[in-house]
Image: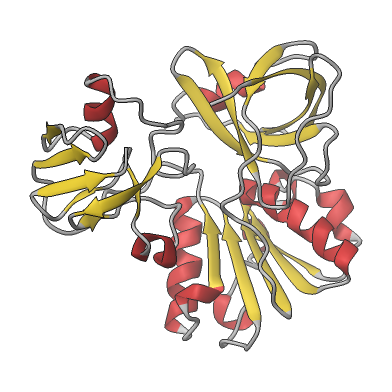
Length: 312
């Protein structure tokens, strides 16, 4: 991965626990442009790389991040909150696994910090004159970022837990509508709730678009992981993957030049193609079509077959 040197140019608090950070290139050059729904990797120290959605107006200027301070996180949010104006970090170019799709109507559903990629989507949809609505859930008005700029928008509905006006998927999303795309982002429990309710209403999975950056999900249900063999296609070399190892761990331990970033199955940097064998997909980034096309995340997914051959 090619890293870009960036500097914090502005730092403000959107809420008591959400910090807004504006980044600019250290050398004064423009950052790569991006589309709504994109995220970047931020390198915060040795072995600490985290993914954050870009929530500013899409373009090549400054990048804006909104970061929730999570008490039980793996350290990334605290490190981001500790950044001050003038501090430097290294970032990746934007990647987009959560893009707007071409359709007639868009329904955006945000839970808490999940508003970050949807804010950029709203901006892009406004520019295009597209039909959309945004449902924004938060614990209270005091925990909702970007409240001032969204309050004047008649297409935005707020759902605050402390006011007992929570999101009702049956009421606020309703039954499936033709040419309508639904975008959901937020904490894992919130997303699981929205998606399960939407599917129960009959929404097809292809109409439901998601992005997860939380990592508190429980392990996939089903049989316990078993060992298997991963074969590197370019050399034919085979390596054993035990129950407590990932494919990525084994590849890196054996000197294989395999791409990676988040190591959680949510960023898409480690994706490779499976040439033979049956994958056991455990990621939150690949679509059903990409999985059917042979795509595979080495950092989180496993194998149902005894041997899995990957295109490396």
